[in-house]
Length: 123
Image (cartoon, rainbow, N blue to C red; front, side, top):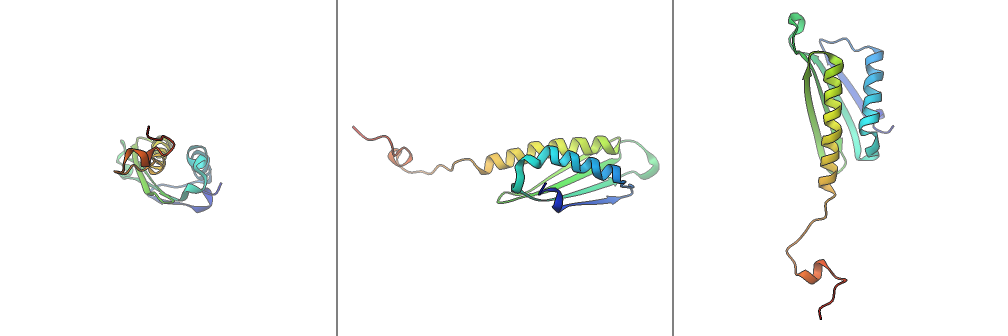
């Protein structure tokens, strides 16, 4: 739940209801709640790109700030607001997972074989 306390939602040309906010919170908690304190803040921008013209015009942009790994930003455009949110949250989950996994890989250096494997002795 630490993620949800630092979540901000901004909307341009779209009415954000309490039902939509609740849906966003549940989706984020389910998607990136498992990363716990690694995610320090989340910002969400929801907009209607084309206005009353119609078409694929709902856009959801989500930016998640990660401790020690920078920021991950995902943008998804869909025909409906709910589908744009679902797509963005799903992609955010995969992107955060990749970024955290990449940041935790052991760093290899150009040192001798014995330095990398100290448990192995020379014969």
